[in-house]
Length: 289
View (cartoon, one colour):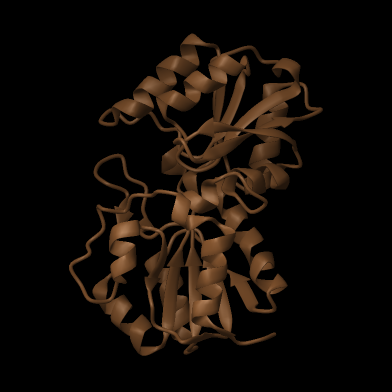
């Protein structure tokens, strides 16, 4: 394995994932500190903490949860990169906001130990070899037909897949086996899979525009991560109304578990560059369902 100049790695990621042409929004983070880079405070993509000049190892993770960062700190390693899909910790909750800032004390430790932090949220959701939905579909063993779920005018975050499975229940069991825990089926439609097609958008995909697009495609099974119809979150309630009205079955498998496969795939991305890399397992929250 090699040691790479940090700026070379950041530039390669930026080019590979086309971050200059993609938008994101982490404006709800606490930016009142000198640790976070000025670029991230305006672009919300890419390098969050610029602490290392060279990178000798990359840790990939879905969310930068405190206990994951502590694992790395406790290893007493230096000149490493944390690559994350999200910029904030995630704790599922029926009330309040589920995302939480990395504590300043952790950021200070990361600076002292030359631990950099890099985030690709929308760019990693965007349809590509390593994207969240593509990686999840591959883990399920489904044949990817085409991208769908136009998030904005630049990216599509979901995939339409083909399967030989015949029933919704069979597909539910496949998802359950793949993620390794219980999943939730909202059986709003027929019990048989229509035309062997499945729509997938990993992560927090319970938004009305997604359900409408699935309905327009005539597909009767949609798989995503977060599916709980929170009473205080109108988009999720409207999503379920549209799915039910259009007889679309919905399977929820948690925000974390549907997106982790992309971060696992990114280990291979870094290894292909000759850099040592390791995926750190996070926590799924069945409260998402």
